Structure formats: C-alpha cells, structure tokens
Image (cartoon, rainbow, N blue to C red; front, side, top):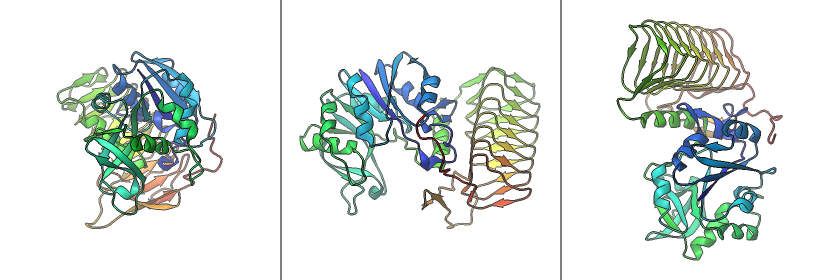
Length: 409
C-alpha cells in the first residue's frame, strides 16, 4: 500500500517560524512533523509519495529515499493550484490503494488502521465551530455531502484532510474544475464519492491535530511529549551527580547538564546541548540540538529550536523559538493575563484569538532579543528581528511576512 503526503505549501500562517523551514520539517519533540506522520504510517504502507514545492529540496535532503522501512519518492508541484492539483502531480506513481494526508498536521497510527476497513474513507473530527471548516453531512457511517465553511449548521464533523482511496479516485481529479478561489479543490472529488454513496467516515477521537498558527506548534510539541510513556528515562549526556530530574526525560548524546539543574516532567533535550548550573527545563519543553541555556534561566513549556542561546536569569513560558535565536540575560515571556482578557494576533491581515492559556510568544529564526526585554502574550518577532534593551513588545515586531520569500526552490 502507498501513501501520498501533501507537503508543497509555504505555510504562511505559521510565519515567522516557518519562513526558512517547510512546516512539514519543523521539529517538535525531537522529530520533524512529517517524520511523526511517517512513523504513524510504518507497518501500514511500504511506499510514500511526497508532493513537494516550497523549499522541497530541503525535505528531500532531510528524509532521503527511505524512512523506517518506507520507500520514499518525490514529485514537484511547481505552481500552487490547490490540493487536487497537488494530488494529481503524484497520480502517475500511484499503483493501487493509497492513504492521502497533509504532511504538516499530526495523525495517529490507530486512525490509519481504522480507515483501512473501507475502500474509501475519510477521517473526521468533531469541532465546536463548524463554520471554520469543511464539514460532512452523514447518514450512519456514510458521508452523504460536503459543505465548505457552512454559514448555517450542517454538522459538527470537520474534514481533517486525511483519506483512504482506491486507484480509480485519481482518475476523478482530471474532471475537477477551478473553484471560486482559482484552485482545484480536493473536496470536489470527495464530494463526488459522497454523492455516489461510496465514502465512509471514521472519527478521529483526538487522533488528528491541526497546525495552523504559531501557537499550534507549541501545543503539538506539548501533545507529543505528553504522549510519551510514563517512566521512560533516556540519558546519554554528561551529567553532574546532583542534577534533579523526574520521569519521562530524554537527554541525547553529547549534551552536558550542570550542577543543580532541574530537568523534569516530559522534557526532551537534543544532542550537543549545554544546560548550565541552576537552569530549569520543565513542563513538556523540548530543546533543539546545539542549544545553550545559561545559569538560572527557567524554560517552562517551550519549544526551542536548534543553535539557540538563552542568557542568564531568563523566564520563558509558552514560547516557540526558531533556529539560531539569541536571547539576552533577564528576558521575560509569560502568558498570564487578567481574567476575561483576550489577546489577538494579526495573521495575514486578520485578527485571530490567541490561546494564551498555553502560548506567550513566537520568535523567528535568527532573531536577537536584547537583555531585559519583556514579551507580552501574543508577541511575534520576525526572522532576523531584534528588540532593544528593556523593551516591552506587544504584538508583532519586524516584517513577519517578507514579500521576497522564495516559494519554490
């Protein structure tokens, strides 16, 4: 069996974090998002066809020709003409039954197995606000209709973008016409399956996690670390004897942890990291390779990229920090708000409510955060952006969506 993984998009809603990295390659809990999905597909498919576009050569270099026993092939989508167009780019390489999924959301092995019971199936999830999604009308276990972002209630079963189909489905893609958005929409072909009475639905039961905005990267990182079995403890680093630690901690080879450091509660520290004396990394945080956390800093529920330097005495809660960031001494980022207060973030010109219960700030790759900076909830720092000494940052700093970014390598 094969899988077709759609990973050609430029993922602008997660800027500035994915300005230089395809979202499918963004590392969460020690592995790229697409790697987590390939792990879930292991034992189900023997080949995956990955549709690439934005920085696609990076995906090829990162994954190579195989992953955990799955043979990998790549096809290019040179123009962003919609999901059906992306899928049609892979059609010639599909031989039989196939799983179809987007490469930058998270899916589970259990959901894939449930979908295999049918010739044609779709993974659906129940949502509180159906007007934000494509939703299914159903009759028993069959889908009878698909409505995109309904203005009146149709159902609370949202489309996750994950399907199991037979080979003849790919022949339907040639018949799809341009939508009002000027794209070839995969949901049009799915709607035809539903009209023909062929499409079954499988409920995700929490097995699908969409990653649409910067704070979803942090929530997904937390979710992945939370799923690690209790009691697992894997330490390959050089550690001073009185380090404090508790269950479910992973510290990889060639990292160094200083005297009196606290590493606790489902934490991932990658290779070649330097955690200084008195630092604390807690509460489902992950630290990327070659990172340095200096004396007395506390990292609480953060996702820290590669080659990051965090100064002394920082308090960072709920941050997503891109690769190559330098954070000066005494920087504070917290997500505490008065009861009832709402924070919004500008995403491509639209105000989106931020879940400050988990998220405080997103710091783009290569940024410099000056000493004693305070990042207020919802702050975003552009790639290569900077702050000033003792500055208080509220909202966006720098050009979050650079006009000159490269779409296809």
